[in-house]
Length: 544
Image (cartoon, rainbow, N blue to C red; front, side):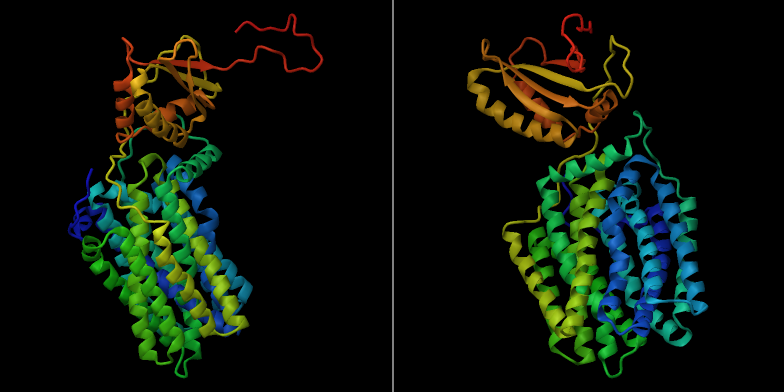
């Protein structure tokens, strides 16, 4: 289904559920940014180590790298709204604890990092189901606008939240900033309680958790477009995080520096991000996805260099405008590309792996650039981080970002579970599937090309040991075979088939020359020989 080149960026706000949740998210983001300023500035008061200051940012992003995939798997198996509510309650409780401990004067660098890490854990649990819920809130054609509006909302708060956080921290202390963050969760909790998403009825048993994680990893690994997006996203996160991680040090080194200056600089970054969101539709209309990403890499690299090579506060604020715009242009484009390139059954896991790559890059970058600044100086760290940003623009020659997928990835819904003569349980297996074809010799090249595509689809959706066999005595006869672990998994395998996949099935059926459609054999493996050592085979043959 083609996505229009230009669409109103405010179209998702016409939908009441999206509007309510988006508005409540603004307040929650505001509180989170106030808390981030308080935590980062408090660390500068607790220690002079640039590494520990940078690790405040890493403590927020590292949990997403560690736990996002687990959350994505749960979001594809269980009720997403329940996960969202649980994550919000957990973060609110940790924020209350952070405020109380700070108010009592018991805070230490290790304790501050630990509690911000726990808030990051809650965010890691929250992000995949929230991002995957976009397609429950808006139609597919409004998805790019919805993702951009989420980014606009966050960066709208970034333009004011850090400045307010700086004022609150300077006037009342970090404990007040932490307390305000704890209160900011209430509106979003209320909005989530009111939201009643329409979820399709489940036709199979829930996928086992470990198998769900493996299925997500397999799907992304067998999707070259997704691999390219994850690779570029990880590099961007690793390099670009230098600005956010070391901005407290930039503000502190300024002669007139303080928490207020830090908040104002973050506000400039947020203002640039809003500008990037506003021009996003126009930029995407004039440039393809790869060129948008190249511009974002190069512009962010230029901003890092300007921060390193100038001392003027005004120039620093000016440099943060293109940095914020580039941040939104790149990350929102990566996010939309992943969502539109992934079917619904695995979208939360694909988004989780994307977030794992990006936030893992951010966590590694926060530590790396903090260590460089600690060992050398701040300017060296900023210049060093600019180099991989420029490299990221050049890498597009080999790892090109695809255009938004125009394939229809909705479920095909044509599979009907066959009536079996054997009484199988869902966990029975392994199951072996064989599909017989008759193919003319002149059609063999086309058949092999289509089967190569079929192999990728089968493996991506859970098949193992896929093989294509040709009968030596009857060369027109071909057999496709593969294994599935259990009968339940075989049913899920077929329900994962999308409308876009159906074209491949139709093309193969057109090449089939038999009088009837291709014959499908569904078999369960049974061992007919005892596995005990040193036991004669005679008398040990079972009757299946």
